[in-house]
Image: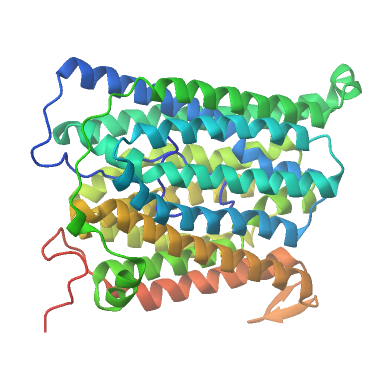
Length: 465
C-alpha cells in the first residue's frame, strides 16, 4: 500500500519522500498467533510491494509536476495541483479510519484502492496528448483521485502491518524494507530524468514525440509497477481485525482537546511547518526546469542528491532517535530545515544546488523520522490510526495554505523589492525568504509547547497543574 506519511516535508512536496514506514502499534491483545512461515512470507511480499511502489513513485508520480512545467504551466496551476489533492487526501483519510472499523476486512480496502491507483495511470497517459488546458484538468482530476485512494487505504495498511510485524523485529525489518525501497525510488527517479533527456536528443525518438513519448513510457511504467505492487499485496496475510468502539473519537473531540494536549500542539507544529514548506515545495521544479533552464536529467540529478542523502542518513537518525528521543531528532531536523531556504539563496551553479539539496535530504530525514516516532510515542495504540488521520488533515491544510499563498505572492508582488535589506528580483527568492520566516516562527512558537515522553499519560490528557 502507499506508505503513510505524517507530512510531506522538503523542497518539492517532493518528487518526494522515500517510503518511510512509521512505527506501528503492537498486535491487539488476544489476537491469534500466526504461524511463523505465514508471517515470513507476508513480510517478504510486503518488501516486494514496497519496491514496486517505489518504481511507480520515482518514475511516475514524481514526474507529474515536471510534465506540467515543461508543458508551460505557471505558479497558480502548480499551486492548485499541490493543494487540492492534499486537501482531498486529508479528508478522505479521516473518513477511512471509520470505514476500516465498519468493513473489518482490511484487504477489502487495501487491494481495491491499490488496483484503482494502477488504473488511474491510463487516463494520465491520455492527458499527455490532449490540448494543454484540457490535459491539465484531466491530470488534476486523476491526481486528486490518486492521492485520495492512497490516503483511503493508509489506515487499513497501518493496522494490518502493525498486526504482522513482530515488535522485537520491527526496527530491523523496516530498516531493511526502507533501505531497499528507498534505493529503488532514487534509481527510478534519476533514470527517469535522463530517459527524458535521451528522448529529446535522440532523432528517432524526437520524431516520435520526443518528450511526450518519454513521459508516456514513464507513466505507463508507473501503472505497471502499481499492478505488480497490488499483486504482492494479495500475498500479504491478513490477521483477524479487532477494534474497540470506545476508542473512537470525532474530529470535533480532537479540536476541543488539542490546545491542552501534547499531541494537539504537535499537530499544530506539523501544520505550521508544512505551511512553510508549501511556499517553496510546489515551485522548486518550476524554478529548476523553467527559470534556470536545467534539463530533465540535471533536475533529476539535483533532486536525487536530496533523496539519496535522506536514504543514507536514515539509519543514523534512527539510532539517534532511540538514544536521544524523537522530540530531539525532530527539533534537529526542523531547525535544520529552516536554514535550507537561506542556503538556496547562495546557490548559483548546479554543484552548489547539489550540496544544498543533499543537506536538505539529511535534515528532512531527521524531521520525518522524528515526527513519525513522536506520533506513536504520544498516542495510545488503539487511537493511533485515527490520530494519524487527523494529523494528515491538518498537515494538508497547512501545505495547501502555503502553496496557494505562495503562488499569489509570486504572481502579484511587484518586483524588484527589498526584504530585510535583501534585494528580491525573482519570485522564487521572495518565496524562499517567506518560507524561511514561516519555518522559523513555527519552531520558535510551537516546538517548545509539547514534551518528549513515551506514553507517561493518556493521549490528549491535559498537563498536570
